[in-house]
Image 1 (cartoon, rainbow, N blue to C red):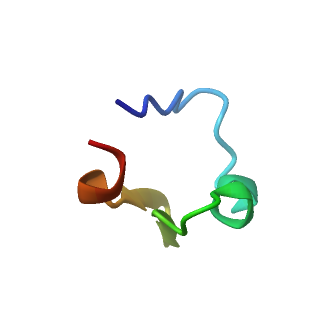
Image 2: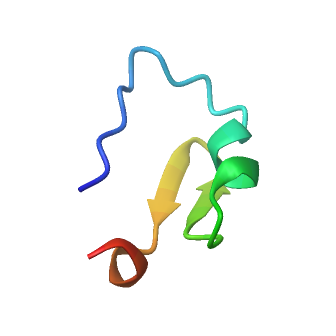
Length: 39
């Protein structure tokens, strides 16, 4: 399970570029995580 700490997340997209399988997407001010990839 992926846990996003909303207090620390600045929505910079850093996690998007670091995800080795491209399962994270930044859409405006929220993260979209492809659960099928990580489950």
